[in-house]
Image (tube, rainbow over all chains, first blue to last red; front, top):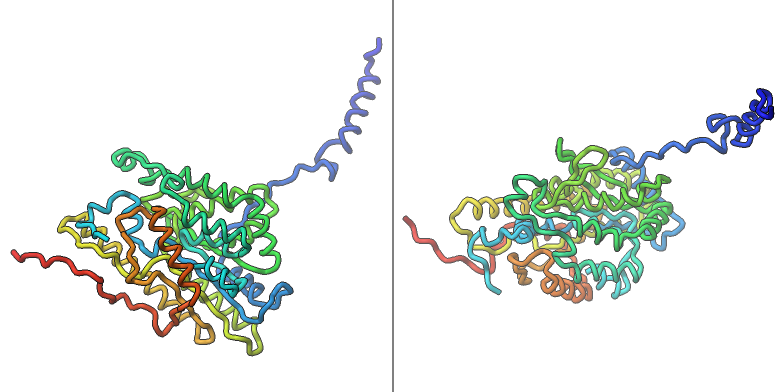
Length: 98
Length: 306
């Protein structure tokens, strides 16, 4: 009979070896890649470190002057814009004419 | 304004960019700063229609069953169209040089301002970085009640402008400390450019004597003054080493507050004004920040007393 015990063991052994070093946990090449955590909100200390890099010497810098841009969005018209977007402007009173 | 500044040929490559609310969306392209990025800024500012940003929900339905009066699914798609994986990879490349792009959200449960280093997100090895980057932009622009908050790792986030319309406190302090620590020798004075997409005066309206009108008007007054307070705060936190340069829409520029924020006709007029303004760059320095006491150009009819 072809399916004797030793042959079965031999087939299993070959399968085990060809699958890679006896299972994924034992083989660096077969290790399951752990999910990489995405960055969390940055705290004050960490932000300070990154700003130090940003304002520090950098090879791509073309001028010695340090610059920062702070953009404020539509919230600068906090009541009016959301109010109009929500279609509530008529509720605020007499609309101006332009 | 940013585009006009670029056309003038003297817009710097900013070391640090911060963006609040829609400033968070524009910040990605302001950081990158190439001609193609400027074109995206132009398209975003002048071509975005209400339909590109939100779908209307029936008011009663929204009040009873929704987390926002509007559905922002189209805005998520709009962000995806412009803030592509390739764009985020370019942000990562800038981050590796040391440049920094920060946006903020507010944790809806505890009201804490959460700062997000978008360059770090872009540089993350996680395959989820692209989706996270775009999700953060959506969260950073989720004006509470109007737009639904965005859930990130089980926490609801909305527009960081709810807490601070300019990162005057945490970022300002960190910037001041970092600058003092890192620059040991005299250099040209550092400059913080503050660009406000508004006029810093309460929009002209003759309110009716009804609770919705008075309530909405009061909110607008309070938040406008809050922004002015933020300006003064950053003027305090950043010492006199820093040059502060403020840009805003002139208070006499006619903006119809009754038009939708995404009305393309009005947006185009403001955009053209920005291009024109950039030819002369009339920055307002810290000594001349607005105080919030400007008078409305037009008065309202005097109400008859009882």
